[in-house]
Structure formats: C-alpha cells, structure tokens
Length: 290
Image (cartoon, rainbow, N blue to C red):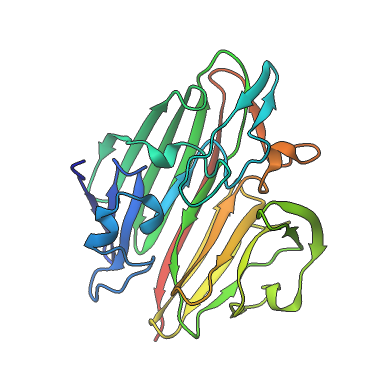
C-alpha cells in the first residue's frame, strides 16, 4: 500500500496523518525543535502499516475488548471474530483497520471519513484542527444500517514516557481485571493509581479502565520541556496503559468501559437507530516549560 501523509501546522506545532492507516496520527511535533508530543513514529513504524505503532488511532464503533464472540443487538446476536494477531478477543472496533477518505483539508484542519460495512454499516468522521499549539480531535459515528446497534467511541493516543513523566487525571474508581484483561469489578483506587494530583506513573503494568472522570488531564514532561493540558468530551472513562520499560504510555478517552456490551446496563454505550449519531472529542494543548 502506498501511504499518503497529510500535513497540518500552526504557529507552534506540526501534525502528520495517515488516512489509509485507519486515519491515524503519525506524529505531532513542536515546529521549532522537532520535539515529539506523541510517541515518535519513525519510517520503520510507518512501514509496518500498523496504527498501533503510530501516534494515535480512533476506536469505532467500540473501544477495547469484547468477550463471548459478539454481543446482543435488538434484532439478535452480532457475531465478532478476533481482529488482532496480539489479542484473542475482538478489540478496538473496525475503523482503525480500514482506509479513510479525505473530505476536506486546509493548512491547519482536515476532515477524514470512513464508510464501513463491518461489523455493520456506519459512517465515521474525524476532524483534526490545529490552533496556537492546541490539537483538537472530533470523532463522530453515524449508524447507517436499518437495524439498531450499540456504539461506543474512543481515541488511543501514545505519549512519550520518561522517568519524570507525571500525570494528573482525577477519577473515582477503577475496574480490576482478570487474566484475559476483562473487567471483573469496580474498586477504590490504589494509592499509586490515584492521579487526583500530578504524580509519577507506576513502575508496574497498568492496563485498566478508570471511571467517574471529568475529562480533564494534565501530562507533565519536565525532561522533554513541555506539558499537555488535555480535555475530553463525551467521555466519562479513560483507559490507562503503562507497559513496563517501553518508553511510552497511553491514556485513552473512551465513552464506555471495557466489555461494556456484557456489563449490566451496558454503561456508556449508545443504541443508535439508522442515521443517528454520537460523538467524542479530545483537545491537547501544548505549553513549553520555561
């Protein structure tokens, strides 16, 4: 596949996108220095053709894992197959594995669109906008199939991690997980997972969903000379992924918990009829540290 990169810029930052690779962000950098604001994706990462090696990708029409081989819709069972070589469960929806089309583009804004038939007919749109060091992403899904279906949304950004990276992301509870990484129960926050105030990331693996979040997040990168003030809309949950020793972490704004399709009340999911829509947004505001 020939990968065409789109380029956006404002006074402070520079953004590259790969529409063919699930409408992923490849890199977002500081114009004057080249400093990565998301995990840096080099030529090898781009050549893999895998959105999970890049800076950020969209989660449509659900986030993270779904158990039991599918889920119930009003018209019956919707079967799903595993869609990743690294996970036995269907994960992250289907939009990240399909090429998107360019709807419009200016120097600092572009709109990308996907018309998908998998696992049902839907239209996804992403709007990317840069202004004075602020990256705004708007993600929307419109259900196109005649029969209603459950939808959820999310974004999966990867951030650089150093020994002094600090995170502030206030939440009230966390989902504890089993060996298959599916949630089992809600629990109080352990001390080293409590990000009511900015603090260092844990040294041990975290791959969990946090709830009762107000959408605000601060990522401080003193070793890299900047911080990101973040705000999500349409997202009461975030997923925090801190692998050990890999130099990055993920805080993912999502509309629902992992495996919400099988949790009581399907928290955060939206049942959409034909032509109905739901959306999620994220803004990341770069500020250089003096």
